[in-house]
Structures are given as C-alpha cells and as structure tokens.
Image: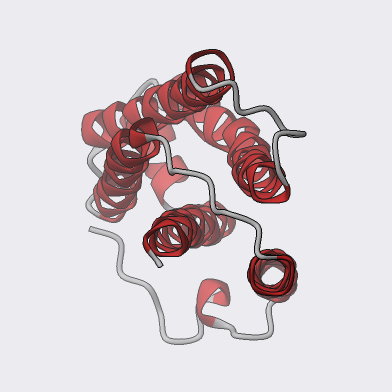
Length: 203
C-alpha cells in the first residue's frame, strides 16, 4: 500500500491543480445557483407553471451514483496497489458515464415526443433543458480524463516494475484525487437539480 508523506504535494492546499479545481467548482456553483434563482424568480413573478420532472431523470440519478461509487473504488484500489481492481472500476465508471449520457438523451426525447415539451414550450421547460444539458456538458468534459487514466493504466501497467512506478507517481495520485472530487461534485449537483425541479413541480 502507498504511504503518503505528510508533505506530499497532493496534500498541499495551494497546489496549482487544487486551486484550479476549486475555482472551477466555485464557478460552476455560481452558474447553477444563478440559473436556479432565475427559474424561481420567473416562476413566482410570471406565474409560469412548472414542468414535470421526467421519471427517467430519477433512473439516471442511480446511474450517476453508480459511477461515483466505482470512482471511489478506483481510487481505493489505486491506494491499495490493486491493478485489476483499479482498471476494472475505471472502466465501469466510463461505461456508466456513457450510459448516463445516452439515457439523458432518451429522457429529452421522451419529453419532446411523448409530452410535446420542447425548449420553447414554456420558460420552465427551457430551464429544465438548460440545467440538464449544462450538467451533462460537464460530465462529458470529465470523460476524456477518465479515458486518459484508463488508457494510461492499460498501456503502462504491464509488469511489476511498471506497476510500481505507476502507483508511486505522486502527480498521478493527485490528479486521480482531483478527478474523484470533480465526479462527486457532479453527483451532488445533479441530486440538487433533481430535488430542486421535483420540489418546484410539487409546490
């Protein structure tokens, strides 16, 4: 098992990678906060009826939570020097993320075809599309990093020596930790959006 020294660079709060990620998450938080406040303001002032949350969004929540779990397991396996578990969980994180993307498309198609709710159907319907599409865009933005980790692991972890070198790389450990934080943030953000839209429909 890797033993991280107290002064390891991935424990430095002010490491440039940490700062960039914190700025990114702060910016995303402000963006979605502004969108949800605008949604609420328009609903209250213009008396616009809410749009029903597609039940597929709830199913997709489970998919995203599953990808978060496999991401946690990938990080744990990395710290345990578990090559097979690390690659396995990275692979399934990618698969679940792609599945989430496809199912989001199905949910939008269901809204549009079965219920005739397009982006121009109402202001609230437009916000539902904007919120979910913006969130998905950031899931897709994280996918290349996941694929990069998986590809590098498959390419470089070919014998005990290269495995040791891979697991001993402090920069790779740092980047994996930051990617895990980013993935959990997207999960929390999606849970917030689903709860926000669901509550708005009920009240």
